[in-house]
Image (tube, rainbow, N blue to C red; front, top):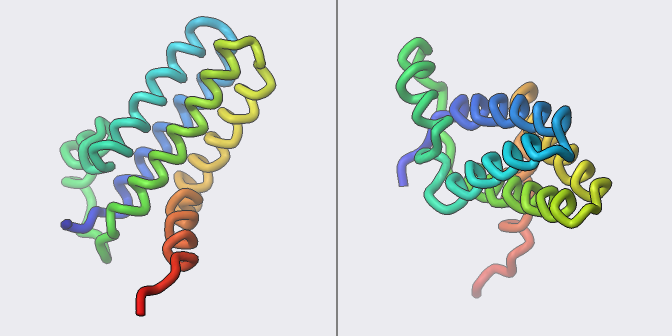
Length: 143
């Protein structure tokens, strides 16, 4: 599979961070829950189809990347795809928390997802990607 420009997932993380901040400001109300559900759907798209097929990737590809110099390197899309699945997990836990009245669980899950998105957006530190690589290293090697 072709590599991806690492600045694309960074833009996606920036957009995700904005969405999650708005969620936290509007939760546990219906607008916040609906927005969190939309973010969960976006995470699901990235996890199922790959980060290259998300709305944020389209925005990056059509609006942002043409204005930038070529990337210094391309990245394997598998770690960011795994990170989308991790984000989906946090969003689903958050939704379950808010929909069942366990608001503290929802706030913690959304807060953790926000921290991860901000680390990626600001520092290019993708926690889900690092977890993916750690899990790869922990797998037993064939002989």
